[in-house]
Length: 458
Image 1: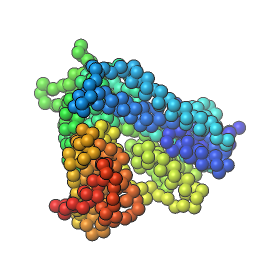
Image 2: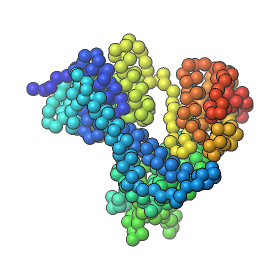
Image 3: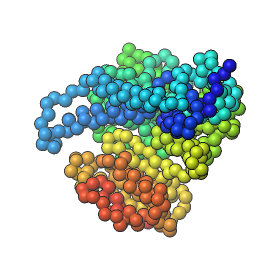
Image 4: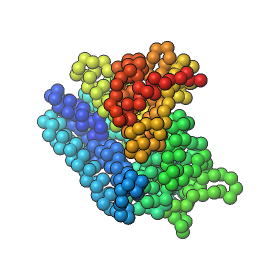
């Protein structure tokens, strides 16, 4: 006989445990299924451990700059075993916290194993059948492994497997010049590795504006990271000197040779072994599950939340997916995906905070707009802390006065961006924040100044 529940959640990533807690409060008997690590990507191999490593790398970088602040520091060295141990301790504590949270829910059962659909209301785990009228898919995504010649014959890391590294690679080659690749590039360069980033596009983080892309590249090149752009015919092979990665197609192909290889070329959803066909659940050509504006799939009683629906791919959007589902199910509150604003961060040091439309998108829209920009060299707080790389840029609609988008690359940029994000959610004109009095000395105090100096976008 199948085990019957009121609800089943497949996956314990960011949205899953919070949804389980709400279902528990509503008195619904719930099964939450996890095949590997409770807490999913963010807790175990994503946000928390990687930003912990970023923190260690930042301390090493600052220690080397100490003399410019009038501080004497003895020879700086990095103990990668201790760096990894610190990362493991922090990530493990988060994993335990999520596990204990779920275990403490009276109406929730945590079931370890790989879940697959048998039909629209049934899931199999470890040979056992579980049934529920409500099923929530929260299986996340994993690193994409490209089909390149020679890749099967060399050892390589992904963002997950590199979490096990407790040594310093002599020369780390990173294929992929977007967010994950760049964070690891700076991190390992600061630890002491030689680092080369290979990117197929003509610039890094190509979805961002050219000035943002160029500034991030200049920042990382200033720390010694090398870039190979417009790479084509990428192949990998083992050599006596390490791993060789081909970067051009011309005769006598040029190559980069390093000791280790990290692939950071995108993500794929974990739907290929989920049994979607058995349940009749629709997905797109990339495997992402199709959902409507309230996270419902085409099958009644089945929702897809988190990275697996391709509608956000961030920890914060995954949690918002839970909020949308819970609001519609229990609060008579018709919340929707389309209500949220695009926002994300690149957690290099200094970081990039992004919200809304890019300058390119605003130009392509043809609307009348104003733009304001200030280099971080003109921000007092940045000068005081010796971190003047980057800039802040804001674009507003000159007719409606609404803020359309912003990028803040620089000291505390990932936090400062929320001043603009919250104003956008409040649907207030930019003049509200341009007239605000901010605390001095901070980075955020210059946002009103930027907004007071707006010029037509030409």
